Amino acid sequence: MKWTNLIYNALVALSLGATAMAETHGGIYTSLGCFNDSATHPALMGPKLLNQPDLSIDQCQAFCGPILYSGVEDGKDCYCGEAIEGGSVVIGYQACNVLCTGGVAYCGGVNAIQIFQVKDYVPPPLWTPLGCYTDYPLSRTLRAGSYIDTNDMSLEDCEDFCDGDHYTYAGVEGGNECYCDNKIHAPGKLTDALECDIQCSGDPDNTCGGSNRIEIFEKIRE
Image 1 (tube, helix red, strand yellow):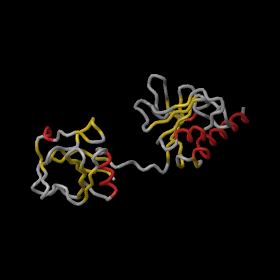
Image 2 (cartoon, helix red, strand yellow):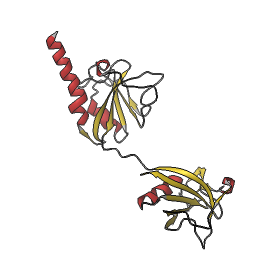
Image 3 (cartoon, helix red, strand yellow):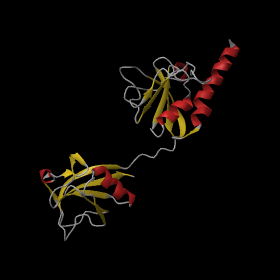
Image 4 (tube, one colour):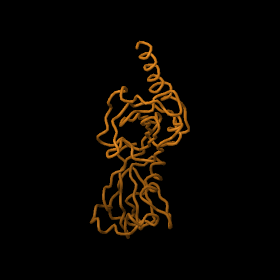
């Protein structure tokens, strides 16, 4: 029994320690622990590999690549996700007691998933909508930076463009125009949201301002 415990503890250390810090093409991973999981309420809801005959932690991390979280379960299953879904909590490594089918480490357990996170992950900026503002060609509400994309403008593209130059505000107008600044200039003022009614040239599911109307977003997290 004593030797069995020593072997078990060594395998747990391998699963939660050295392997967790291995370099993969997705980055350096760190172990977050053993979480409860179920088919009806999965912890990770992205791509997955099931019933793998030779699964290892490294293989799962390589499969998930740059996705924030990777997880192994029941020795043979690999899951990926950008978030750990609600209801899944750490339950202790003792529940992750099934050996990987392709290695000597543990790969989760029955209804228990060992989750890893990309250690060098940097979350993207967070933008919040401020509404629809008036705007005029001779007196721009946002005027520090701009570009036009007739065929492929989207909210995300404009936000990324403004973030790249470290601006606080991003605004879209006329369906294909993007403007940036660190302040909102007069005489621009908030107006009826329905006046920002032109579809984005690259994303018809969203509006990108209107005629002389700019839809403004503020960066609230770097």
